[in-house]
Length: 396
Ligand code: SR1
Ligand code: MG
Image (cartoon, rainbow, N blue to C red; front, side, top):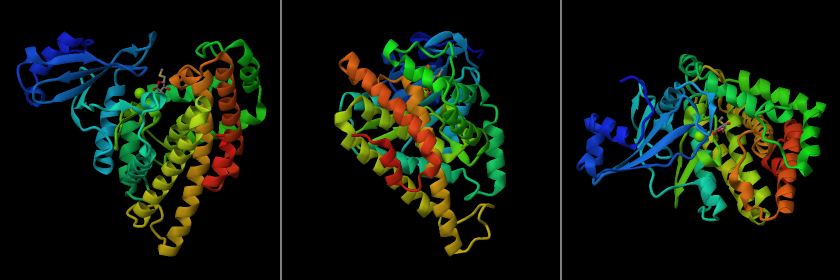
C-alpha cells in the first residue's frame, strides 16, 4: 500500500487487514478505541485498545511533527525497527516487543505500554519510582555488549555499520542540534530570554570550549564502538512501578558507548538543575546508572567472542576493561555536558524547566545547566571515576 498519513479511522481499516494484529486486539473493529498520543518531536503515535489486548502504532511523518516545514525522510522508521530487532534478545524485557513493521507505510506496531508513563513526565510530577536508572544502566550495557567488536566477530559489526549507515537524516539532526548549533548563532535556536543572552553569546565565542566540542564531534562520528540508541533521554523511557522500558530507537547508529550514557545522565542532571530540591534523588539515580552499567558490562565482557581483545588472557582483559570503562566515562561526561547545553538553549528544549515557578529561578536553573555543561565538556578528559564526574556536577 503506498504511503499515506494515518488517522484513527484509516488505522482501524489498516489493522482489520492485518489478521495477526487484529486478533491481538480481539473483538470487533467497531469496538476498538483508537487514541492519538503523539508526544515526541517527530512521529504520530496511536494506542489501540480492543477487548482482548492493546497495540501501539507509530508512524513516521514526511516532516518533523512539531515543525511541519522541516522535511524528514520516512525511512527513519526502518532504522527504529532494525534497532529493536538488533537489540531485542539482549535487552528483553526492558523494551517493548515489536510485532510488525510495514515498510511501505513506515509504521511500527508494537506492544502497548499501559499504564506506563513517560519518565520525564513522571519526574516532573514527582511520581517516578526511584531505581529506574539501574534498569537503564543494565539496558545500555546489554545493548552495546550485543553489538560491540569486543564480544562479536567483526563481521557482525560490519553488518551493523551497513544496516545503520543510511540513518543519515537523524544523525544529521544529532550533529546539528547537539554537537554544533548551541555553539553558534543559528536560526533554529529559539531566542533566549534577554538575561540569558550574554551566557549564550559567550558559548558562541568560547574557543577552548569549541576545541573540546570538536573532540566530541570526532568521537561521535568516528568511534563506532557499538550500536547506540542514539536519543536516550528521559522522554525515551517509560515506567510503571519497577517496569522500565526504553522506546524510540530511531536515532540508532554505530557510535561511542558514552553517547547513550551521556545523553541519559545529562537529562537527569538537567532535572536536578530545574528542581534543586531533588538533587539527592538525582545523584542516587546517576550513581545507580553508572554502577549498574559498569557491573553488567564487566560481567558480560569477562568472556570474549570478538576480534578485539582476542589475544588477551584474564589478567590483561581486566586491565583492558578498566581502561575501556574510563574512556567510556570520559565520553559520557562530555556528551552529558553537550546534552545539558542543547536542551537548555537549542531547538529541542525540555519541559523540566516548567518546574521553575518564577522567572528568576528559571534563569538560575538554565544558567546552572549551561555552566555545568560547559565545565563537563572542558574537564571530561580529566575524569577517571564516578566521584570525579559527580564533583563536576555539583548538583546541590
Ligand atoms: C527535530 S528532532 C529534535 C529532537 O527530538 C528528538 O527526540 C531528538 O532528541 C532530537 O534531537
Ligand atoms: Mg523520540
